[in-house]
Amino acid sequence: MYISESDKMLIRQLVEKQLEAFQAKDLGTALALTSPKIRQKFTPQEFNHIIEDKYGVLLKPRSVMFRGFTLVNNFPALIAMIMDQEGNLVKVLFIMQHQPDYSWCIQGYELVGINEKIF
Image (cartoon, rainbow, N blue to C red):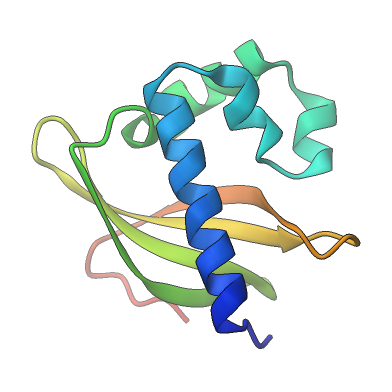
């Protein structure tokens, strides 16, 4: 799937906005940036519990460095290296979904080993 430079910029801004919402504990905004399927399935509190349980590094990263794009099951994904508060590095894939109105939303997350190859 081809992703234009303007779409790449929009995706990065969307991910940055969600990370800022997580840090501000703005659960409504964080959830609003996800796909319609996720928004329909979870309340903001339920969504937060899932993030805390499985993707806690997203809540209070010490630093974030974006590393490009890849495909995950034919969905574009933004690759990020995230350092947690203890200094541990985690590679996170922000899996994106293109909407009928041409906007983007976050479809999911995948934590990947630092040295694991992404195809």
